[in-house]
Image (cartoon, rainbow, N blue to C red; front, side):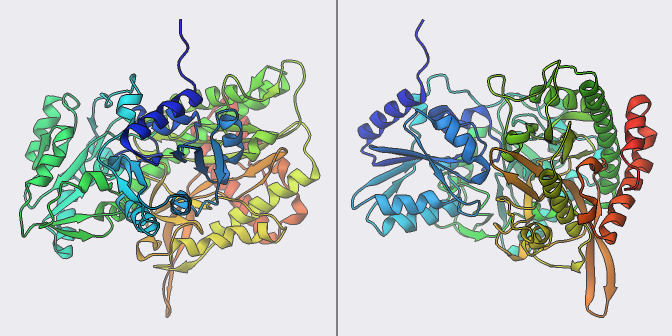
Amino acid sequence: MSQPPSAVGRIASLRQAMRHHGLSAWIVPSSDPHLSEYLPERWQGRQWLSGFTGSVGTLVVTPHFAGVWVDSRYWLQADAELSGTGITPMKINANAGVAFIDWLAANCGQGDQIGVDGRVLGLAATRALQDAISGCGASLRMDFDLLDDLWPERPGLPAAPIFEQQPRFAPVSRSAKLHKVREAMTVAGAGWHLISALDDIAWVLNLRGSDVPYNPVFVAHLLIGPQVATLFVSDGKLPPQLRTRLAADGVQLAGYDQLASHLAKLTAGSAMLIDPRRVTAGIVQPLASVVRRVEQINPTTLAKSMKNDAEVELIRSTMELDGAALAEFFAWLEQALARREPVTELTIDERITQARARRDGYFSPSFATIAGFNANGAMPHYRATTNSHAVICDGRNTGNGLLLIDSGGQYQTGTTDITRVVAVGETSAEQRQDFTRVLKGVIALSQARFPRGTRSPMLDSLARAPIWASGAEYGHGTGHGVGFFLNVHEGPHGITPYLLPEPQTAMEPGMVTSNEPGIYRAGRWGVRIENLLLTVPAQTTEFGTFLGFETLTLCPIDSRCIERDLLNPAEVDWLNDYHATVRARVAPHVTGAAADWLQTNTQPI
């Protein structure tokens, strides 16, 4: 039986196809027609070609070179997975996501044709690419996808059914949300609005699905007109009763592949609102030149980031359930290690998922669990596999050091994301110092006060300051927005230096954001502590309204990892108050060993 082609063979086949089409380079971004972070299998072309499994990276292939551009979260992973393939890991900073464009501009010449499937390249990125390569005399082709012929077993469109949120979990109706979007369209001077971002579509229609791993969304486009909205989705995904309810709210259905024909029918005098960062060049290509384009952020993106009071209450209850699941898990872990039971990083993933699955309203993990022991914890996006993982206890001996666990759950009442680092056996003074410095960063951001409208990237240095003071740094942002039973990563805000401080990044009440500074020592250990924060009004003075944060996550922070002398009295008070809150709110949901563990691990330090 013949073996499937390796990355080397697939790249060779790609080069042959490039020669056939007269292409000097081919680009494969980690993207789909919806610019999703997590991709349906059909659009996992970069992984299929290269073998690199990281969630972010851009593959560029020329006749004599192949490289995958990855940021620091994936450097070690790329080195390992691309070894022996002839593909070079191109290491960039997190704020250099389009560095491949500069490389192409420097390495292509007059008359070269660069190819990419325009349906998966963002409109804003396309413009940047065209501007860069025009200077060297190269041109861009976006009218076909080489993978269609190279990937014979390429998966089709996802077929999982779409379901409607229960009214108690969707306090604002579909018709009300559509009305608000149309109001924003009117203000922008547009009679039409195209939404391709899957979480925006799910939010405005109060629908959910399971087409994308970890995110309860479905593959579709939505075209909102003056009176009717059209949902472009594969046949058979909506049950008849749901189709009827959508029709009653002015939402009609069309096939997923019919969007282009609908866009082409728009006539002179029409105005289309699109977000160039959330729509691809190939998707909007059918729009006639006589259709005026109004380019600005999708109104849904900002609206869904600000959770209403009913959603906030549901999120708070979700955090209690998630905290109970974590107490149950950590109680098991502590007992398993004490009994010298076999425990690996894979066991952590299995057990923490099982604990969450026993809670009401649980749907799925919100991302792939990261369980990294010692050196593996130094890779921020590490993922244990059956072929490569660390053993924490082999059934006889237990290791020593730090175990980093980054995990989360999708519940119908909210989305969770939490990182905890726990001591296993003995820890060193240097490990505890790193842990405490990261904790100081968490506390500093948690206690922040800032004027309403402050651009979220400006808050990043608050968490970094205690880490910088020790001469350390981390190569990722401090915080990302989190959806309500939606994507675990959502915008438009983010507490990160890698986001431009634009008006839409301003912090507003109701926004949920992660708080996750870290320190990573390659080959040794990693520390990251993560809570979710809710932006809330703090006070109003003669200088205006000030905002602050409410910590939503409810799980103890391992005091065994703390160097007490590095905390000032205010930081000790914050930690003790936080643990008292965790104990009070999670205790009613746990019994037995989990209750005992919770009580022990929330005592004042």
